[in-house]
Image 1 (cartoon, helix red, strand yellow):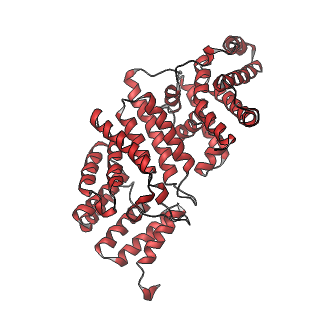
Image 2 (cartoon, rainbow, N blue to C red):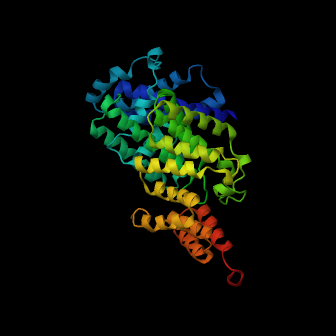
Image 3 (cartoon, helix red, strand yellow):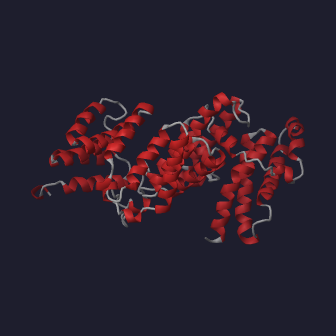
Length: 410
C-alpha cells in the first residue's frame, strides 16, 4: 500500500473520532462537520509529503478547532461570545479523550427525523469520512444532489434539537436498529449496484464492513450487530467468483467456490455461530445463518436446502419483506419442486411491491426453466432484462434468455 492510500485509510478511521470530539464540545453538528472536512483535506494534502504527525488525532482536532474558530469569528458578536470559550481551549490530552464517541455519532447521523437516503449520505460523510464527490460516484448520482441531502440532513438535525449524547435506554435499541439498517443499505448497494455498468462498488461494501466492524467492537454482546457483520463477511466472500473477467454476472450455483475468500467465511461463520448461541435471534442473524449454509457447501449440489427453507420460514415470520418472499420461494422450489415454487410465486405477485419487479420475473424464469418450460422461461428472462437498471444483471438475464432460444429462432 502506498503512502497516499495509508493516509487515506488513517483519515477515514480518525474522521468520526475527531468530529465526535468537536460536536461534544460545541453541540453544533453542521459547523463541526464542515471544519473536520477542511482538516481532513489539509491532512490529505500535507501528510503524504511531510509525514504523519506523532499525534494524528490531536493534529486533526487542532486544525479543525482553528477552522471552527475562524468560522465563529466571522459571525455575530453574540455567537462569538457563546462559542469562543469552547473554541479557544488549547489543544492537549483533553481534546483527544480515550472514549470513542463513534457510536454516538452514528446514532446522530441516523436520527429518526431523517429519511434513509439522508441517513446513508450523512453516515458516509461524517462517520465514513468519504467526500461528497466520493459518495456521488459510488451511488452514480450528481454531486450536487449528495451535497443537498447532507446539507438538509444537518439542518433537520439542528432544527430537531437533537443533542450529541447517547439516547436513553428505551430508545437505544430502536436507534441502533436504524444504524444497522443504514449499514445494510450501504453494503447491499455496493454488492449489487441498483444501476450502472458495474455489478459491485467495492468502496461501499468495504466501508460498510469497516463501520460494522467498529460497531461490533463497541457492542460485542449485541447479537444483531454480530449477525450483520457476519452476513456482510459471508456474502462478500463470494465476490471474487461472482463476475467473469468481462464483468458478466455468475450465479451462485455456477461460481468457482475455490475462489471464495476462505478467511472471510471462517470469520463470518464463527461470528454467527457465537451470536446464535449467546443472544436473542434476530433477522440479521437468520440471514447470516442462511449465507453460512450456502458458503459451507463445497458444491452447489451439496447445499442443505431443507435447512435454508427452515431458516427462511423463521425469517418470514420475524421480518417479512419482498426479497425474503422471493428467496424463500426459491428454497421451496429446491425442496418441494419447481411447480410448488411457481404456485407460491403466483400468490406473491399480488404484493404491489413485487408486481412487475424484475427479480420476480427472473425467479419465475428460473423456476420455469427447472420445470422444463423453456419458452415461458425465456419470456420471463426477457421481461426481467428489460426492467432492471443494472447493466450486468441485464446482460446475464439476456444470456439466460438466449440460451433458451430454439436454433430456428436464433
